[in-house]
Image 1 (cartoon, rainbow, N blue to C red):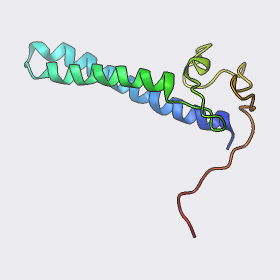
Image 2: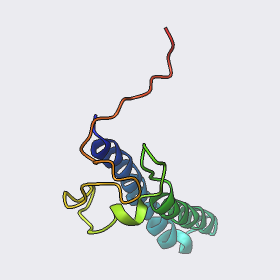
Image 3: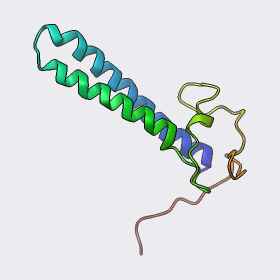
Image 4: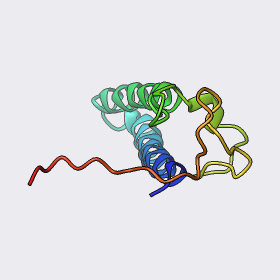
Length: 108
């Protein structure tokens, strides 16, 4: 697995969760007129959106130097994947297309 594919996987998962949270926020905001407890659903979804944005900016890190790559990977926006124009980590210079070892939590 390459660094790019690992970062794409993390980014896709977070963006899909963000989309679902937006839907919950919109539905909850619309249904506030039906019942008041939907305001709690809307507020929790809004807090979730803030946390997901913070994770996208500071939680996605280079596996080699552990530097936050959020701002770098969000430019230029290409939807669910990282742009092919980004070739290296700007902090340590490792190629995003290099292979990484997947650490296994099982010891045999």
